Length: 579
Image (cartoon, rainbow, N blue to C red; front, side, top):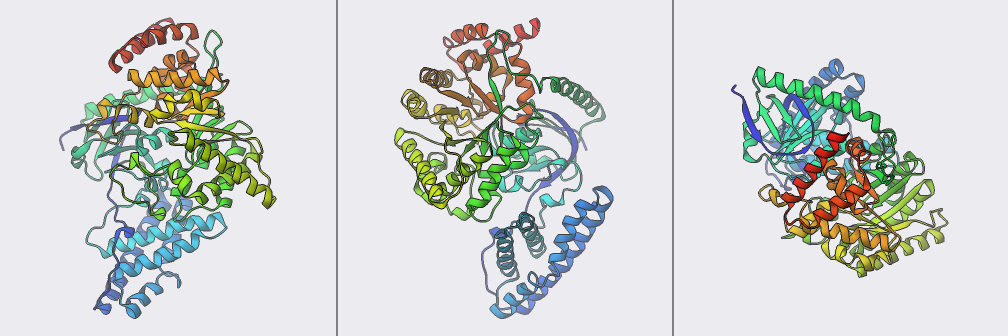
């Protein structure tokens, strides 16, 4: 096959070479319930689907044992055992024979019931088996349908994952050790998939569009997540060129490791705190070794996305406590549930909206469904006993919302006192600055909050009116837009005047090109994907604050994002020449 070159958005750096795994799932949850007048035929269809699933799983088990080891094979063996479990398969036949449900509907009903049972169990290992139940259900449904699809659990070797998009519920299932990179039809630089790729240090090219149809399952691929290149069936000469580039990158990464233990201090003594963004407990376990001084953003929505129902107070408390303990007393900023927009929770049954990014999301849901927010605040306050936790409220647009959220925290503390549960009695409360109204009102907020954290991903979107998920207008999305820089300056200045601190947890914080500007603005805490820490730290230690302040003053006079970017690129060249 001739070499094909596709172009998308480079959202997570790195050259990766591997086989394409085209992910096109069949989803049991999408079916409609149906009755049947031919229960005998439906029973026969279900029995045939079961036999095919058993054959398919056994083949996967054999391959896993020879290539991945017994541990991976055991997961698949567990799935195979469900097909002969008396509480799993026989009830499906009963629903067909006794209640005249279709085979697909019977599978859906039993899988939902059994998975829900596992998810309600106290034992964490047993709760995790719910995902296996659902995967077996999807396998059965695939055999019942004309379209077989592919499943993430089918990945048994290192691949480059190709998909229309990856939902949060997809990505929490990934075996990260087997996924070299992502290629997607849709998605922008701050989409969920981009954030995940950066967090895991996985190369990613998103927003390829309909050209993705050129990629077939098993094709040899090369992706360059720095520039957005995707090469299908590369020639031998192209492959050799990219292998050399990959070797250079690996050498550079080895050099960066030397910066992990260094403090982020400029040559003239200006110190910043470098923190990491995380979405799961597992991500926190190696942060200290990677050079993180704190968790600047714990995205709690990932905990909610991994469940089929709202996680209770105890479940949340254990997760937040585990992160606090992993950080050994260093700060952990926990954001309350930020759902809506591009992140959905089916069990919340949120209304469909014409413009969800401007609608019912984040703190707006929490203040409307108060028990949801109250439960989370109680769990966070209790976790504060195990470390230094701070609470951050997302999507605050005005003082009224902030004050209501603060009152909810006080109510949570009062309930814990009455229940006799230990909790931290001095937790800092802050807000995300991601709406222009909050940025413009920063001076008023700074009198009441303990800290700000600037979420540049949404702040840019709302400031320049660009849907950050839409690749058609992604060229207009730029955090170097002069209007955005003025808002950043307003927020940081307000916090300094009132003796508070400002962090940044958006993508901009992890961009070494932005580092001189952020130093010049006086940003206190920078939170980013763990894979960016050493790159940013390397830049900071070669800067002088006085020179960055002078650069920032010149940037205030510029009128376009392109001019700002050129000024920063020129400044970087000067730094590199003098390093």
